[in-house]
Image 1: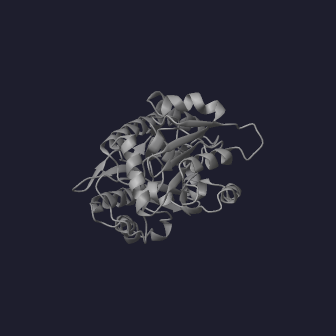
Image 2 (image 1 turned 90 degrees about the vertical axis):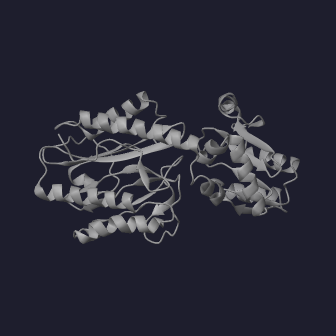
Length: 368
């Protein structure tokens, strides 16, 4: 599906809910529709009318860069140095130009500041602003063939990242150095930076779901969690592996085997039509039956693509049906305060018959 086709599909969906224009600012959505990389501040804003009118409102100093990236030709520069409101002027002008100043205007409510919304409402008193955040997030759940190829490449890159982290892992090496090695490798392999800080944690720190790397050296007898992400053309990879410095204890080995089986159960449960909550239940039941139910502190998985956290969530209560060409990140884990945690994470593609692993680095227990 081309970017223009995505825009047409978005317009079709907008018409069904009687929206006359859209104001889009969420960076992953800008990448999805316009192929523009953006930070939230200063804002690059895409306005779409239901007749196909488009405009990208861009800070003056970003215009040349945006021209290189986007297929949209109508770029409207605005000053980022003049006295506010500067962006609202341009939004008002374009909405009036396309005749959408008194209809339903869809906004991503988490990306329009309350003060800005109030200012737009003052300028456009006959407009009705309503949330359309779900429109694009729903579109992005099912991946196209082109998207799957890019996600597979992101998975290859993150596989290389974790491989380099394992190679760097040794007694006395700091968590930060291992993280830096992984990030450097992924950049060399084609990653556009990392989607989240590379999470290398060791010893008691692994009992926290998200523990950031520090100057702490890894020590003999410790668990080490290697959790990292990659970014290929905006599409993300994610993986976690478990390593031990020296031989693990019987208890540590058993906990690893429980989580390994929980991951297997989650993957085996996946097929089109299964509810996301059932994937969580499959993994969670393995952990519960082995006496660690109270240590299962996080969902089993979630969708991913242009964002590391997308719908659906594989957790209790999520009734979303799993569909072919969804991409899921699965990360069963147990976390025991004062002792440590075990988590294995992999990306899978939902197929007609089940699930295909996208991340392929060895899942067996790593001993260094």
